[in-house]
Length: 319
Image 1 (cartoon, rainbow, N blue to C red):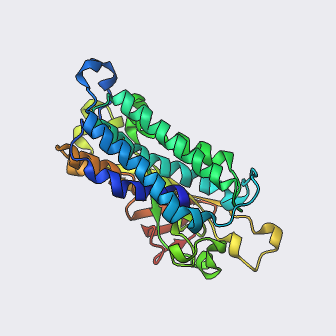
Image 2 (image 1 turned 45 degrees about the vertical axis):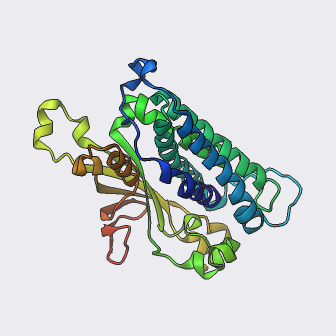
Image 3 (image 1 turned 90 degrees about the horizontal axis):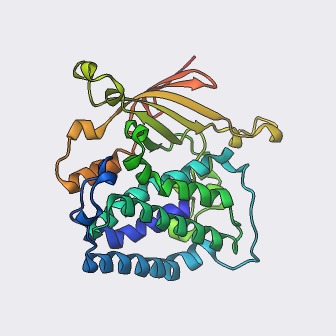
């Protein structure tokens, strides 16, 4: 997750600042006349030039030496054992966030809703493949499944617009440094001078520090007659992360394989709370609606526990 996330974050620090108006994202726009959407050449040049320029600058200045360092012979890597594959969800989440941002960019350019989400997915797919290709010439190795996960996330915005069932679900993420073992050993040799030298938080998967969530918008699922009696903002989420067995020296080496933990928690639907009307505010709420903000949570597996304010583990009851 780390390289993809940081690369794309830096790209949008250059390019997304130019975006100030885009058509709202709605699920039924696929049936509208495509002649309503006209690409604006100047805006297309701004976005295209920003992306190309950012990719080039970030590679030459930041990634070439900072991430990959000395080149090695190309190799594929089977990394299914790493972080119990929670990193694949991290790559997917990176794709989710930036599929939304690229879609907003292409909306601003004047593309139709289908074209903007399609090109967002293509852009993310190309980015993920190129990053992994470069990984293949580094100690990391090329991970096919990292590229697949990130690319699938890149088409998330398309799914939200054109698959009705996805209107009821948001993919969310939470991070809090509860367990410090990853950092005590220097982030498993991740990071370096460009990231503080001790690791990268997007690679800190262990001890429930990083959790992923599917948040269900209950109000939208209810029959029309029942919606007036249910708080529109109240959603419920199912989450997952992995425990800290990886760093438990009391266990035999062969048992230090992280296990998944699963959670259940109430959640907030920010779209229902703020009900944004302007395009910029809709876009902002869309992005923040992919963050799982603190709320009470119950761990339902492997050991039941209650956390009054997950992901902050400061107060917890384990049964």
